[in-house]
Length: 401
Ligand code: ADP
Image 1: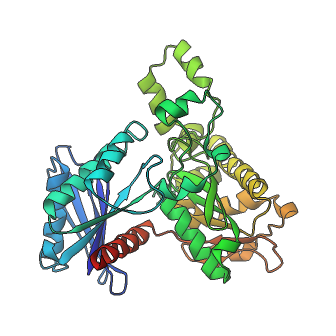
Image 2: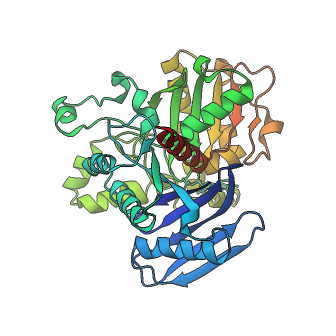
């Protein structure tokens, strides 16, 4: 059985095709620049490493998906689309509706639409993606994993904002959290690696990529996470600000900054990019730092300082911690960020091993000293695999009924 995992954005579709016999990825790629005069669709064939690219106008998601299917068929990865029995959708916001992965039905789409206000940049495109797949694969089973679902276990005192309660009652304004599929996956992987049941561990998972968030997971359940009603809250990120004084909104308004410009400032021109002025990519920032760029250095210090503060806060929230886990493009690859984030945490039992840490990339490993009371792990994330597994599980369960 082949499971096709899709992640639909406004102008792109990322995909991975899994063979569930051995959970291998047989092909993956991306359709980009949907809606622009010229688009591009790529496919990487896993076994051979061959890469194919096709440039053509992609006026909408349907043409993009059809092109992906054409490429997969032309390269004999599938005979035709009937080979794909299950589609797994990466979905963003489910509000308070769903706590786990779902069979995507009309009802689910309606509930997602109700959450459009909470995730205007993501949910409408996710819905378009599902509808397009339903049209192109009328016989397939559709499953989905929401980014918010894993964090639905947060207690009310962690997820509520300290504002007028009627905003929660009227608009469901509260903290939801994101990257849930990743936090849940790496926590489970870490527990297996440590040979301890996750239900008996307190772990802090730092998913550090272009978007970054950190979660406190106690007894297998998310009890707090840094992203809020939207993915703007929390850690400093590539281009997003993370936590700031909300009064900046009034300040900006009085300075005559429009709402759209302020939105762009906080989402696209802040974080590493905004402070350092170089790039949202850590590699570019390190290069600039090594060349003596002081602002890039400041940005890096802020990034790791804010990360460390959250680690301390979550250890306090859980009354202790057994493992800190780094994942995401930065967490998996950037040993200097890991080092700076752990520096000074020896008082709480965190002892990073500099030799194990340095040079370690994208590999599950313990990077703490044997004497470290708190284990520090690097765990590569794999959200697509979780979505494939969950959708396949739901398909099998539904078939049995
Ligand atoms: P996304 O959040 O878009 O899924 P990723 O999790 O892939 O992103 O993370 C991308 C980021 O990871 C890049 O912007 C860069 O900052 C960082 N990164 C990737 N590789 C390295 C590396 N070798 N060293 C330092 N940072 C890296």
